[in-house]
Image 1: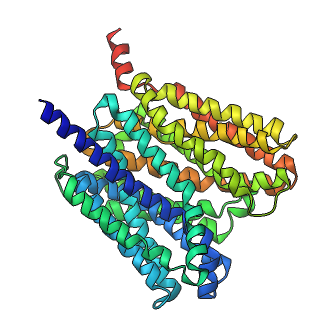
Image 2: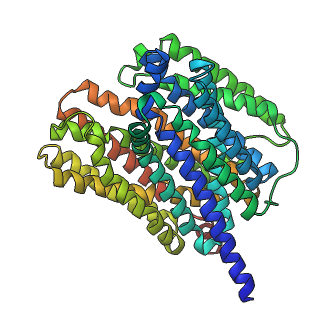
Image 3: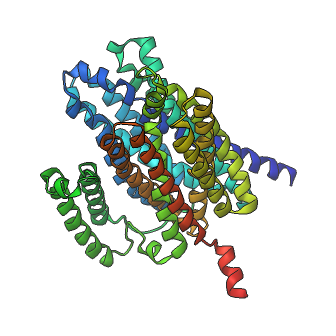
Length: 471
């Protein structure tokens, strides 16, 4: 008995360590490219409007492919797909590095697409495997650790990219991508040595046509959203860069629905839309995505109100980064005892209070200490709310056989939020160049927090529903 218990514990530890390494690598290489974008542009002699696509193309394909790879993981086993995605991610990184010698910028874009395919499998598969492998009484804590690692990687990504460039030199930016190869190889070997094959796979053929149509509708949806000016919708909606992808999205969505009605094993589980807890989780995940992406504007806000030099605002992100690492594991333990609803509401309440403090006090009475305190509270609230509760909510309402698809669906909805919200936030700043523009932006973030909290109040866990039916 003691031996079995020890083996189980070592198995849990292997799952947690290996999959968290996957989350760390996937997250780091998302953020590492941003600070070196201009360096890469100069290397290929291209302008900003072209160079930004090394980031845009990654986010588009990452979002579109998450549910597809999640479905593949449910059909063929999470561990198997995870290890394959590690190799795919490595291949994409190597192509990006080789683009400086052959293929040029088009080769770099192809490499970024391949990287997105790999990350689109590593991240949701890791969360699903961690969430389903651990017993219910430890699930929240395990998901909290995973969320903390994801948060750390996202916060540190840009800093790691800048640090590596300062060490190797701007003309050797390609080394950032080559570094992925040995790391991915080690991670691949660890999966083969310490992770057992997953036997919870579904049977049946993959819905190929449904998958292709799903990818197309998501890509065109995100392309349309990226071109919309939410403060001048009438003018922006008539631009070809908006209405053409929007119409294509609608067309592919209609065809997708018709195809999925006939599919024996649809790529998107329509029953998700018939489950009130799952729909609520999706809506809350959208607002969480809107809230998370607001972090990208924190440096700009800090520089403005503190009248600090351009580029120095990133140091204030450390206040968010440090406290956001504390929230997920602590919140995960609370989820195990209190359930995801209370923890999520607590995190949202913390952020509402923190953003109110930043909006109405720090913005009009700027000082470094108050700013750091406000941002630290934002990070703490974000740590409790950003990933663990919603992942837990979706897992407790879905079968283990398609848990990865469920996690991937939530990740997709969250990604749509991170795509839409920046245009709204920047719109407030550009409409009013003074401090009031930033205050309006912060108020908008608070509104998203409030809306997420309102929908969370209507959520009931399966246990609560069973108790209600018994009464």
